[in-house]
Image 1: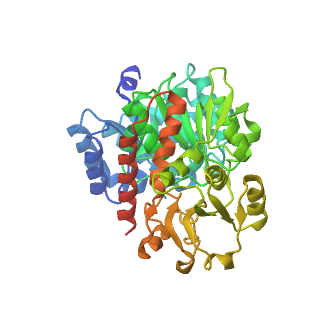
Image 2 (image 1 turned 120 degrees about the vertical axis):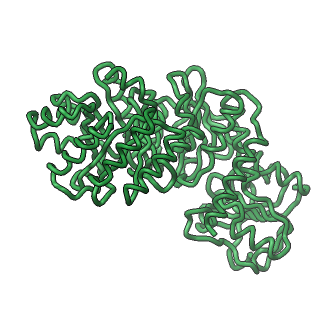
Image 3 (image 1 turned 180 degrees about the horizontal axis):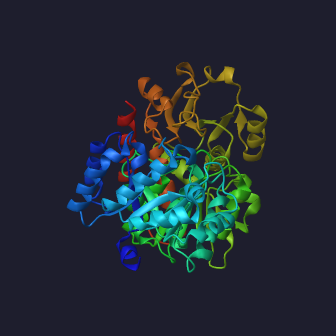
Length: 509
């Protein structure tokens, strides 16, 4: 096993296909960049027919290390055959050259120790796995069920239902790293953290999709993303962890932007998307991992204020925080960089003193915009879905409110959208009608898509616009400097963000 372990990389790429030929073609493509592959034979209608092609592939690619998997449907796979048929497929895959076979725990328990012992005569290393597609439960009891079979590798894959479940799996990996060879990952949208940080905690390796769209488990990431965006091959004990926290953040480009900046400035750090709307869930992760810095977005910008050790004066004044820094003594310090990244682009285009500005929204981003613009002497009016929230903000900042039926009759110098309306994934696409867009300049803080419905409407009327991507990159640059003390590579950050947005726009056509 020691020789075999020396051949394993941190990433095992799952290979699927509807036919044996398609599976081998995908393996041919993947092996150029990753020599550690998992052949999901259960994806084939007749997996035994693929064995000759698999044997030829492994003969031609002696550098490859292969896991054979034929997971039955009852255990979350796609194979509809019997346990005996499953064992036959795996045995023949081992004879074809697969160095590791993945046997589901439920199968092992069905054939009992004697059956597993006979199965091991195939000569391949045995990986016994367990998958829970519903939750993260008692990992220790699962481990205790697998251990008596004495497999070379133990694989336990629960589903994360919250950020804290990642802490559970990583603590488990840390406890077992000197006791057994364990692979541990959390599935699901909340499980991203374990897929990136699990190897640091002690997971023998992690799994990845060959390409986007070929995922074999909920929340699985493409191999190239793990390497290029998250630099998994460089994540180690001293790697600092940062993240963007909020809900929704599935479409956030913060990870690609910030990880690009870390790589460019040779900072040993990784930036993750931390999807949650629960502050306690977030804080547990922050303290246990630990997380050294946060970009905070909706809906947590105001709620997090009560859980910080210190906040700068501007955050206190606004009542919202969008950036958290962990100090050397472990204290969490809150900052608000929203103000300057909203005000600065506007100042570069027109004087703000006595400018008539309509701010749409009354949440964390809107609060920063309102307070910042009022401080510059602008005459700020707030329109919000909930009038009471707008009125409260107006009293605190020295602004005014407006009824929706009055907007079309009123002219403004600037309109600022500080809501999530128009964002990718948001069902509501427009916040104002064309007749209500009476302004000299429109600034949409939504950056994804790069051309929001509001910006398109403004351009149609000949109104100059400021895209949210401009603010987004400036925001990231300010946060990068707060976290690292280094100047941010703004041009590189702008390049990767706009490139990603254009790619998304093309794909959506």
